[in-house]
Image (cartoon, rainbow, N blue to C red; front, side, top):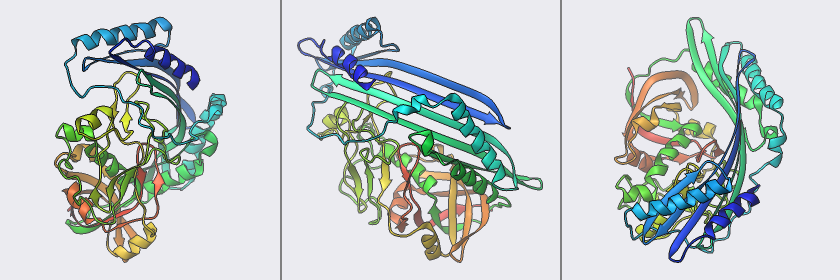
Length: 448
């Protein structure tokens, strides 16, 4: 199927006129979502979308148009409309499609063709099983508010008159449960999940146990007292923080004056134990891809090395405008959009100690299991943040009583500089970042 999509993209690119650059991005997505409640199917949806986005650049003006169909007439109309739009666009000397840069694409096994053969009844069965297993995991589980199965198969191709020819295929599927635990009049919640590239990869028991444990561990939670404290970020929370940092490490954000790292290239922006990279060539990452959304091969980009800022992520436009080059980091929301800049597989280089070993070294602190309102409570431009947290106190090197209705406040710059340790428990999660335990001392905790 990806060959068919590439052929469509190439036919569009071949129609470039003299002095004109033409690019076509063609995509097809199939997804399924199953939600169950109390042993019954609440909803089941299956959808397929396909379409083409066309960019035309002429005289440093760019036009874009898309069609939600791969019918030949619809594709031709999108090309004509993109040409027309280019005539009305503003001139920008940095506009232009990328030339092939000679980087060889990684050989990645990301697609499971037989996902299409999995019956809907089998997908429903997985959602029902994660609900049943969550209820059975602990006697204090009063119910499962949400139990879901979801999957997606994405195929895309991009070709341009500059000689770019690329195709990408990947599948992903997951199970998820949101549990309610109770003790008397008290109710607490917790979620669990597992993710893979095929339903056979999914561990329902893992998702159910995680949801039940996270819900029951919060029973009896109280507001902690305000103080300065050592914060230990659970891998899931670290992944959320990395997602926040990714926007500040975009060359596009730097050009727009929306990054706290602007003008800091080559400076120490974090502790020496911090090395942060974006590596879409890693097949374990669920954002992995051999090519970016402009058809250039992806590559491992080290953004922060030993605490020192090394580079920003770039697409062709931002790289050209900043005087560098694309880092193979173009991303799109789909065929309806032009390329932006973004990460696909952010991760910290892990340390050599488990979370349990790090907790033992910390002695007293708080293990943050959930950060509430992170993206609304944090500013990637100034770095200021104040977010609600829930988790478990750490006493004498072990987890103790649960706490909630607390807030941690600092700046992202200070937190990066103060990181004392990174755990060995790196785990690839849904989305564009991996989680790992991180220890940060002397953070302001606000409670009672």
